[in-house]
Image (tube, rainbow over all chains, first blue to last red; front, side):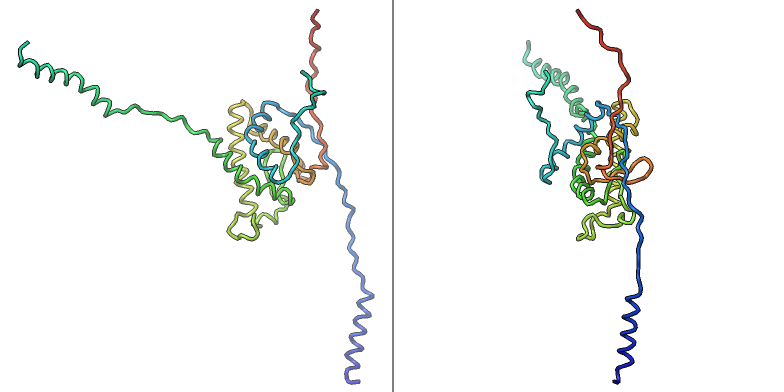
Length: 78
Length: 169
């Protein structure tokens, strides 16, 4: 009975905690796609591809899929 | 010919031959090595950085801009170490700055060769990176928004309409 007030206080606090509610409202996240107009300059792309050829060498070790450079012989236009 | 003339002839022949030899020794032909291509050094440095940058791009910490430059996606990550286990490693911000410095130098060199502006070359590299990027990689749009590659819809610019080629008969 000595601890009765302490127990009562603890019970009261626990009960009050149950009454508290914490609500976080998040705005709906909407990811809208962006449109980019790509104006490819073939000459510059060729120079850049040549310079960054090491990216092709590094990627296979990482297990990334490489762009298929082989052309289907049936669709190839000669 | 008297025997006395023989040493005289030898001496005069030696005198005649000596100056060119001495000149050769004094002035060795100056070999002018062609200036080393600065792109070789740039390429090596960028190659060394590539794996770390790709890992950071995969982790969503580093993204690319359409200007062809790398950027730290969250400014608060800029002080993080590239290798968290190694406190001596570069910070993300330093790595990105070093990469951009080299890219800018490359764009300047290519622009000079191709008679374009460095900005145009940078944009072309931005397009190149976008086209080979993973879906989860981040790109910074022109308005400053970060978007993942999967949310970027690319439209090719239509070339100006050309008159149809004349039909040969």
